[in-house]
Image (cartoon, rainbow, N blue to C red):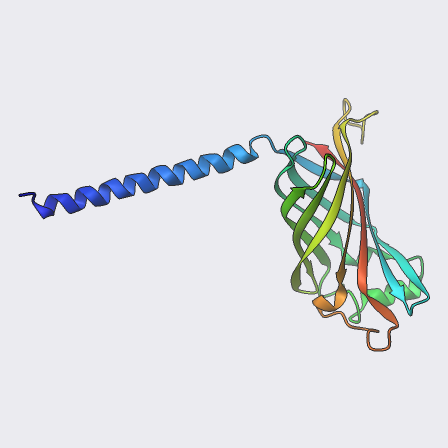
Length: 213
């Protein structure tokens, strides 16, 4: 007859060893998935973040954020996205109208003193074509985070035609265009909605060039 005092510890040790091997395999597979993903840093001199918002039904106001930065890990061959983010300084909003820009900075809209940054953190990239995809992530605005989706077109990936920023040699650059939208009321920004003075939907227009590190 087998002594239970020895059988149970042996079973537990065997199960623990299998769990250890499984954890190691999962960690290695995750590392392999990102092994070919390069780190790209967005060039702030070639980073445009624009928006369109309806004004009382007559026309859309076009604006920009003049200060933004970001980076991401991405393999253009496989479409594998490791991680990525971009950060926008909210007080850099610009619509070419000083009084309106001051209004956008106050508590009715961006409340820049309390929330100086707006951040997008990528969570998933799904290729939809040879040079297109859908980027999903969390947009943090006014202390709230909501999932938004951006349609992406990768315009070009290759060696830059000339040196950038006094760098020796020509960097490897990825250029992309993004389009998306969100409702500002989802973040608690409701000024002008009841009288249809300011639209709820904010259309995003994002263009950037990023250098491979």
